[in-house]
Image 1 (tube, one colour):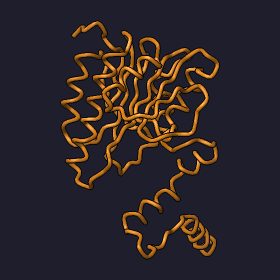
Image 2 (cartoon, rainbow, N blue to C red):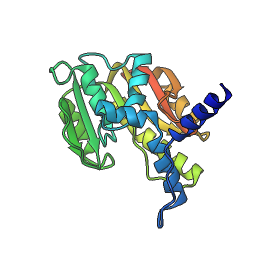
Image 3 (spheres, rainbow, N blue to C red):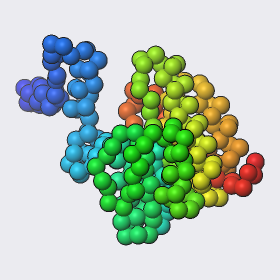
Amino acid sequence: MASKKKDGGRGQRDLKVKVKTARGRKTSSTRWLQRQLNDPYVAEAKRQGLRSRSAFKLMQMDDQHGFLTPGASVVDLGAAPGGWSEVAAKRVHSVEGEGKVVAIDIHDIEPIAGVTFLHADFYDEDAPDRLKEALGGPADVVMSDMAAHATGHRKTDHLKIIALCEIALDFACDVLKPGGVFVAKVLQGGTEHELLAQMRQFFRSVSHVKPDASRADSAELYVLAKDFRGGGEA
């Protein structure tokens, strides 16, 4: 029995893929690659034919909070490679013509059934108007998985992603219908609490969410704001 346990333990360890540090590859890149190869969500995304593991983050948040309802109009900011738009299109039934999904990203993506995609920088002066035109009316949900390029300096990276969230919030407050939902990526670092306070002026329910698919060792969080007050009500 002891021998079987020992062999079984070794067998379990052998299931984990190890990546050797190749010449010219940084240690951090090797760690990232090893983490990807051993990430069950990466494997499951491939198995299901999904565009990214981040799709599971949106699925889990929606499973818990139920904001992607059939017939809803959704805006996806920072959509590439399209994982969130893909999930939203299925859940709001945009392929069937019930709901609508409009997405934007500075990086191009392969077409997604039921999604209107704008290949543009959200910071472009005309981007908000182009999104509104494509939307054709108020939105039920504005979601943002936008992230700035990492500098490696935690405080700087935190401030950059908070700035992205703030501009996404401004847009959300401009296009959401009363009762609408805003969800966006942030990083732990302190000033996200100031952002929550700002959001509470416009939404009746505001909270942090960390879906299971968001890696436990990551500073990544999402802010979920529900029940938009609308009409400038504070």
